[in-house]
Structure formats: structure tokens, C-alpha cells
Length: 153
Image 1 (tube, rainbow, N blue to C red):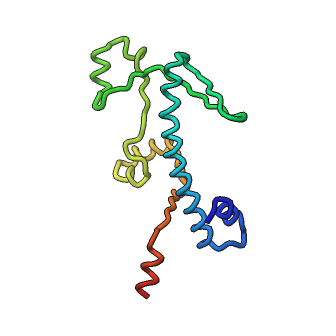
Image 2: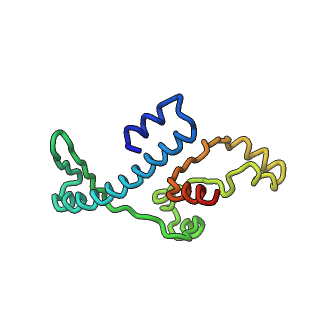
Image 3: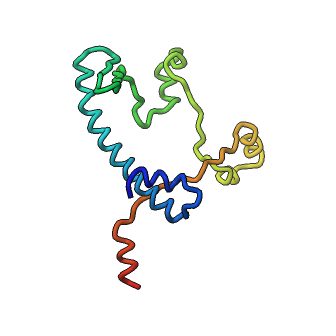
């Protein structure tokens, strides 16, 4: 199936779910291959931009195409296992100037909180909101599976 045909099937209200899945698998595989190719391209343009020396470099392509490369400054990342209490003791009054402390839930489902006392559950209900996430979708083409099913029938 070609790209335009696959795109057309996905937009076609009369197409069956089975046809749409097959078309989506074609496009999904193409996107994954394109990502690999674009990663290779990025490895080509990054050194060119670094050699240029500016923090933002525009590279012109054929027609009206253009590539923008932004060179970020190195950043510090905290080492694993770092503890807030240890850092507070080490830095004293400078702690709040250097660190921003973000709270995050260790357990993020309401079921996880059910084991705590009611007063904890009641408090958590006032400081949290339930977020419903859409189901995750992945698609793949099971090459050879159809032939195996046919042969075994």
C-alpha cells in the first residue's frame, strides 16, 4: 500500500476497521523509518552548526527549505540518590537560592492511597485531581502472520 492510499483509507468513512488498521500500520512503519533517517541527518548538521560558532545557525537547502540548529549551553543535572535533607544541611541558608523543590506523588492512583488512614485520604482529595489519560495506541505490521494463518487452516 502506498502512502497516499493509506492516508485515503484512514480518512474514508466507508473503510472497515481492519482496512484502517492495515493502512495505519503502513504509515506507522514509515514514520518510524523517517525518524531514523532524520536522526542520521541531525548527526550531519550538528557538527556544521557547532563549527560555525553561533548559538543559532540557519542552514539553507534547495528551494525554500531551511534547517535551524540551536546549540544549548551545558546544564547541570542532579546525581541520582541525592537527598533534600542532606543538601539542606550542607548548604544551609543557600539551599533555597540553589534548589527548587517540586513535590510529586510516589503513588499516583487513588487505589494506592486507600491503604492510608481516612484523614490522609481526605487531605489528598483536597490537593489532587484525577486526570484520565487516553488509551495508548501502537501499531505494527505483522509480516508473515497472515501466511502462517492461511497455511495452518
